[in-house]
Amino acid sequence: MNINKKHVMAGMIASALVIPMADINDVHADEVMQTTARVNFRKGPGTNYSSMYVIGKGEKVTCLETNGSWIKAVHNSKTGYIHKDYVSGISSDSNTGSTTVKYVKANGGLNVRKGPSTSYAKIGKLANGSKVNVIATSGGWSKINYGSTVGYVSNDYLVNEGHTNNEPTAGTTKYVKANGGLNVRKGPSTSYAKVGKLANGSQVKVISTSNGWSKIESGNINGYVSDQYLTANKPSTGGSDNTGTDNTGSNNVGSDASTSNQASQVVSFARAQKGKKYSWGAQGPNSFDCSGFTYYVYKNSVGITLPRVSSSQGNAGVAVSKSNLQPGDLVFFDTSGPNNGVITHVGIYAGNNMLIHASSGKGVVVETSMATSYWQNAFVKARRVL
Image 1 (cartoon, rainbow, N blue to C red):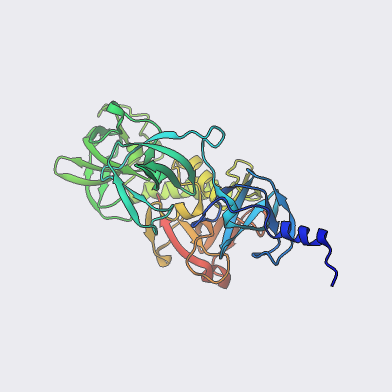
Image 2 (cartoon, rainbow, N blue to C red):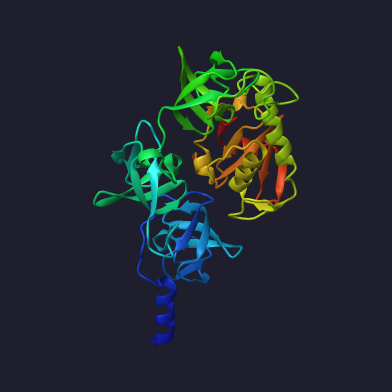
């Protein structure tokens, strides 16, 4: 039997260009990764599929989903598959090899885990105000130096700068700036019951903050209030209050009417983006991927900054049942096949069973009925951040 040596060599190169350099155990949809070596970009999830071309070392790809040890990804507007061993999260200092200094902002301390997800085991805990060296960030998590090893922490509890003594402020004193008064609730959302109401100018002690809400103490009232109606300087309790005033009605974020106003702003702003181009990794203003769209809408309509990727947005705010959806809620889906609860898509609920989202299938931002069997079967969960 004749064996062409050139064909053998070509086959070996096509099967594996390099020795695996990375160990990626948890990859999320919408996550931008970086190749660690030259690697084949294949038509399917296996070496038995042909290679479309070779992606160079250090190039960016966007993960769509995982299939065993393979990542379905987008590169240069083409969709294909890369083995997990040849990509890694992108370091914010990958050009210099240095680390970024950040500080823990979590009054109860911050868990350090073996991998970038709460599904990984805890290996320790960092105190509030701790200084950390960030090696890389990806998918809402940071890889950090932890003693003689490395660990992972949520980006939601890291800040760029410390305050006095290089520590974030704990027990900060602030004041209510809301002419109509400010509702205090049992939890960080208007879906929680009211436990009291604070007058404009009331002094509060901030215990912790997260996702636009602060846990506070004021006299004998303990609960949660919206951050946007707290100020460092005591406002005048008589006369004009420009910052907190809403000329069309009460500025009390705890009232149902004000929450409805915010929801209307979100939905109206989202609808204004319809027809804009769908593009992986984009977050506006002219093109979006699904989570880039929700990120852009919330930030620019009501000033709420969501996590960037859909899997992390799935932990923002509070859980909402499918039967209790309200306009402005975030709605999450598994669009990668049989629904196993993995978040691969996010949109904004517009009311009347309608969804506004950046659709990869349509190629633009659209408004779609959720009443179809497809969306009903793909539904994973909903979160309320207003």
